[in-house]
Image (cartoon, rainbow, N blue to C red):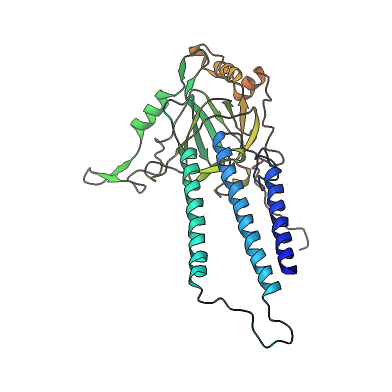
Length: 352
């Protein structure tokens, strides 16, 4: 009887503990149930964070069950004092062995299923996104440009710098000429290392410098497509509030990398830090940028201000256009991370 009461009380305590954790997050996105993750700002981020939350809860439940069985065995099936008899053994119990072999496979299958479901949601792409953004990473900064932009007045603005892209394609040095007058393929998938004709260029660009952190201005409530490429080594595009990162490769097509992803919308306005998450050289830690999410009306105004004068715009810089729409002209989210890339060398004190 005593043993039964102890087991019932232990089961009740475990049940109440699990219920408390679950009920503490009637809205599942809270600081407790995020288990260390930041709060996402896109529907894709919510799907990933929910997968993480339920995976951790499932792991905790399994952990409690395993710990409970271990303590139950230790307490009630240990060798009794002054008794030569061993506790009852359950070796070669076929049903039990089949159960604890099958259950892990079921758990893995369930986790695999939900992982695939969430992955498909995150990687889903639709035609005709509202805004297409070109992201170019280089040592050690970022260049952001726009390609196609659906404006609020029902028109689409083609921001691609077709002249520059065409000139680069025509002048690309993809091979050398040998003594017989024949082309010799270059060392990088047949291309010359200096060939960057795969990069995109826009009439509205923001280029980071050692003195200025680049700001990528995006609208809320719009489907956005990102097209990633590196001008040199492998980098990674990471906005923590997106809850995932994407590698940024040079020659993405030749390197068989999917360099395009979409988010269905940014759900709230604000400034969100972005970083390079791939060790890329000396100043990797200072390779920061900022995503500035603004209302669609402010975004349309920003694009109009940045358009070339020949197309009816004022051709303002990123900072000036941000100031015109009532936003901070400088990055506000990267503190305390410094972007200073001044070269410094250790000095030896005199007399040493």
